[in-house]
Image (cartoon, rainbow over all chains, first blue to last red; front, side, top):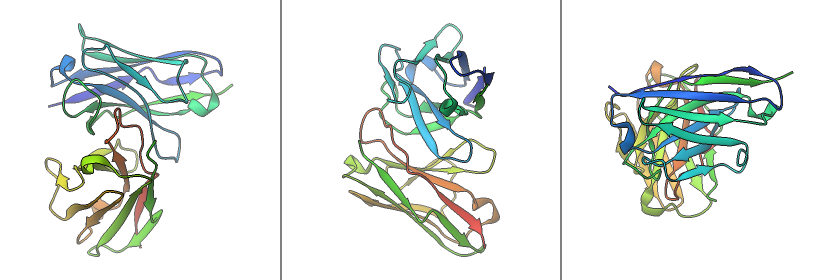
Length: 122
Length: 109
């Protein structure tokens, strides 16, 4: 059974940093592209970032480019999102999601984690 | 970037009725690469439909998807109490897929 377990959310001041983690199990982690998708309170889904299965290719939404960095660690099957220069508008539940289809992030999400809440406020 | 517009924003129906949700793309979605997700309150989204019309594993056949090009539809026949939720469409014709629709809430009338 595929499991994605996010952690690392919390309250942070504007301008601060936070690193989110997503522990993956139940599938061959290195074989699948992964992504972060966020949802602001009461709002819809917003794609944030993606990384290929082999980790060579990364992609970012314009709203986070230059501030967020996605990475993955194969030794412990964990996906990360390093978030710097946080703003109030980054407040959201952040979901880790697995792409269907393999190394390239070009299909739909077939598995989602339960999410971790990030609140940016002074 | 392809923009997805879902309508209506909210659908008020009774259990047993049929729900028809629309997702319109600003340009043609290649290969009918459109997915639908269901999100219940306090839960993560989950995959319902991919390839515009293929049901994901374990999804009951009262859920069906159709459409191509720029117009797509999710139909839920005979609404069950557990079907009242928010539904999002997503296109994956561009890599990586970046856009979701804004969602349609199906609520109990």
